[in-house]
Image 1 (cartoon, rainbow, N blue to C red):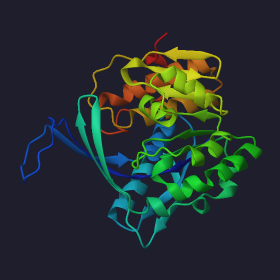
Image 2: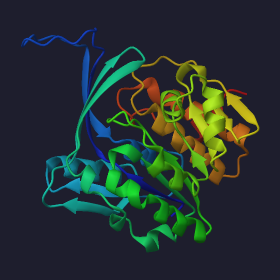
Image 3: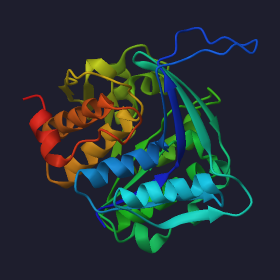
Length: 306
C-alpha cells in the first residue's frame, strides 16, 4: 500500500444552503438540496487519495449498524481497503449533519464509537508496510490521539512519512500538550487557517504557521478562497485556489490533504505539491458532499494553476 489513513468515518447528511439564523420553536423550513454521503475527514481524504491513483488502506472504527455498513461499502466502492476497519459491537457509528450556507457550514456530530477508537485498532504490520501514514480529526479521537505519536514513530522507523490534519476541536481548548509530541514525528501538518490561529493564539496565518513549523513539521495551511501556504519555519511557499462554481465546500480540506500526499509521494517539490493540493481542494467543491467531485490525477494536473 502507498497510504494508510487513520481516523473518523461516518455518514454525512448535508443540507442547504440554509438561510441564517437557524430557527427553533418547531419551525420547518425548506432548503434546495439534501444528500446522504460518506463523511469523516479521514475517510474523505482516503477516497480522494484513491481517486488520485494511490493504493489506500483505512484504519478506524464503525458500529455494527446500517450506518457502519454504509461507510464500509462507500469506502470499498471507491477503492479503499477496509480490512482494518474495526466493527464496534457496543457503540454506534458516528453520525454528522452539515448545514451549508455559502462557503461556510455548521457541523453537528454524534460521536458514537469515535471516543473508543484507540491506537490498538491500527495494525502495526500495516503501519510498517506503507509509504505514508495520515491521521485526521485529532481532537475528535482523544484515545487515538494519545497513542498517535507511537504509531507515527513506528511509521518513521519503517522509512514512511507522516501527516496530520487536526480538524476542529469541539471543546475549544486546543490542548497543545497532547499535540506537540505528535508534531515532533509529523512530516506534514495540515491545518486550515482557523485551526492554525486557534492552536497558536496568533491573528496572522503566516506567523502562526511559522510557530508550528519550528516544532518540526512542514506546516501546510488551507485558507479557502485565499489558497494555501507551506511554511518550513524559515521559508514560505504559496498557491492560489482555483476559481470554480462551488456547490458546497464539505470535505475540500480533506481533498486538499489527499492532493498534497499524492503529490509528495509522486516526487513533487513543495511548490508544485501545494498547487496540486489546492487544485484538488477547489475541484472537490463542484458537487455536494466530500467525495462526489474529487478529481483524478490528470484532472488535478490540468486544473492546477501554473
